[in-house]
Length: 576
Image 1 (tube, one colour):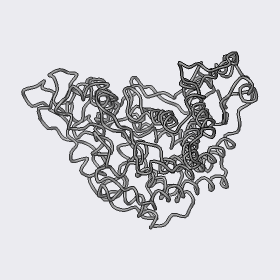
Image 2 (tube, rainbow, N blue to C red; image 1 turned 90 degrees about the horizontal axis):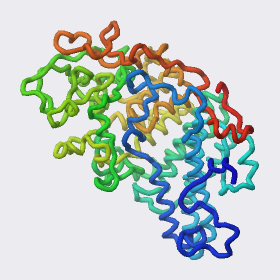
Image 3 (tube, rainbow, N blue to C red; image 1 turned 120 degrees about the horizontal axis):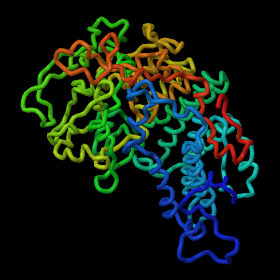
Image 4 (tube, rainbow, N blue to C red; image 1 turned 90 degrees about the vertical axis):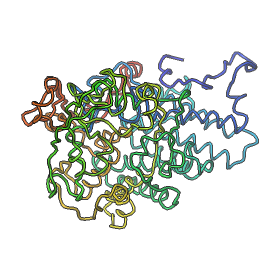
């Protein structure tokens, strides 16, 4: 095969036997001698679960996606690409997994001894995984290739042809999703295996993306309504099943050593110390500067009266007060001055207190929330002053060496969970223009009940901070999504993309995303020489005035040069 076929290559069990051999080798697996029973099919399909990263070390589905207006990175996180790259895993990797899915899909029908129901179950899982991987390509690149077989050098129409329109690919994705939802029948009670409700969750997320993308980017209302209705119906099926409910604790969804028994989980990733662990906690409370919350994100949390910053009657101040304490680093025997924002957090949506420490921490004022080793590395600092608390589990206090280990954390990671379903349902209903108070009460208001916040009504007061040009109700539903899914699954970036609002990441036009906590009044008590402050006393983490300026071309990734050089018919995305 020519080099271009590496684009579609995969690993395990994906290599064809040579035509020169009359018999297949006895000492290695091939498709013919492996796909002979359901047990082997299940073992093969287990790999699909592993590709959901969950928590990680340096990268992962939580915290590590910094291109958004929620997180503060020193020097400003740039756009993913500012020029077409030589290669791109965002393009290559999904096609490796699509080939893997097609291997399963093509093998299952020929396996003797499996019932039709079992075959359809595994075909459903293969098609679900294939749909998810194609969606990842469409989301980043738009037009792409729909591949439903294991390609070889004879498939020149795909290997050397033009990309297919994104709408055509998305319609194929929907076909796969519908087949999966209708045919996956096994493991219905499992929360660590693909099942019908995982399929419905994937369908809801994909169709909500497509429905809102078509409404706000493509301006195709007919197509938008079709996909938003599919999203709403998928969510409604999950909700009507009554198999899931919100966990009592919001934070426990993200810091638990074992999510088994948590009825909010639809699919989660389980970790075990010594066999599979991660470093998300370490990266959010270690010696490296933590990428904390921006002022823009901090200000998006409602006050406890249910009103935003502009209209609340509660104390609007975000200034803390000086306290003298001995932190847990073990460095000091005498109390040291810190800025405490406990009173500030008490006035806000309790989800904010689950996200950030009550003690501000920044270069020159490090803070340890757990016992350390009497070294500076035991203290945490944040680029914005706001510490990242959500993922830390105080039970690690018995062994803090594991807390600060890149592969020593074993808290479980949600992949799909019920809160997402409720958010997707409310947004789909609102975008369809058919949302009722009953719809809000069984979705958004359940999330608010969990944390003791006032209910959202179908006629909320207008918020002057609404910079998206949408109704007051849709603005509030989007706010709810932001605060509920803060740091989760790169949701903020992809939500801005589908809402046609990536321009909000332009730091010159929206400077609040370059600012952090207010510390300017405390220079007499605390060393502020190691942080930059703006004229109002807020931490400015741009690092010598760096900016991130938006261009419409950033709505799509550029096709990598290696693919364009091998096939000029692939074309290039606008502006690249």
